Image 1 (cartoon, rainbow, N blue to C red):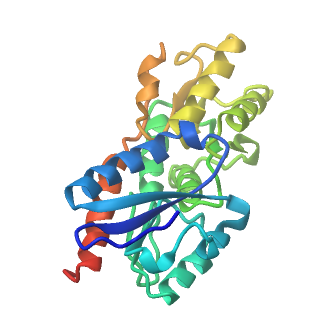
Image 2 (cartoon, rainbow, N blue to C red; image 1 turned 60 degrees about the vertical axis):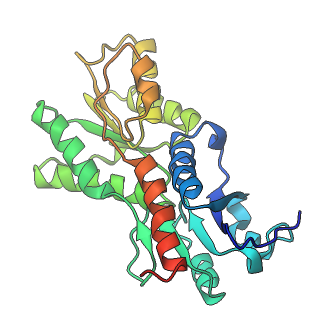
Amino acid sequence: MTIRRSSTYKIFALVVRRFEDIFHSFYVSEIIKGASYSASRLKIDLLIHITDKTVHADWLNSPTLNLSCIDGILFADIDCDVKTLKKVIDKKIPCLVMNNYLKDPINCIAIDNKNAAIDVVEYLIGLGHKRIATISGDLSTQAGKDRLEGYKVALAQNKISLNTNYIRTGNFLRTQAHQAAQTLLSLRDRPTAIFAASDIMALEAITVAKNKKINVPNDLSVAGFDDNPIVTYSSISLTTVSQPIVEMGRRAVEDLHAVVSGKV
């Protein structure tokens, strides 16, 4: 495929790392939705480039992506791979990273995952819970690490001892979250509340609880993260954190367009 520059349209590449549930991912679909809104309005051709997580940097040399024709690059996430990001910067291509805050002078946009997680866990503590477990996200991502850190900080601030048996990794995936919940709810001194780092994982925890005849929310409180519309189909109301993901995708394109156009 040959990409040619247009005098009217700019070309942005949206780089997304491939993972197990990528085509069912609420985060990815909302980012694309928001980015496409702004791209259409600003006359930008948006190329979605899905990369293999294990060889993420290889896309820089991909024969299907002519970087000389790309005006800007948007990263849906970088999974802490700052090295690849700096290679893009070295090639003098304007770029912007979503879902990450970086200390380097790099354009980025994200929510405060750590403090949002603190708020959720403190909500559970406010309900009287002390045995609070977590199903963490992918710890190679800043969002996953910050949400886990928020969980730990909330416990410490409320003088609740950290029980490492109550920390299980779900990697933002259904299968692993199901296994994590199975482990947590099989403990002799099982938790009375679970904070899952995504709504998809929270729903898996609820499914496991139902299978074990554990009543939610009477015997187990479950909280998630994302405000995924899929939870509206659950028979149980889920406490969650609302993420303006569509707005993040929209703003990312607008901010990068401003950089490319020399407006900032």
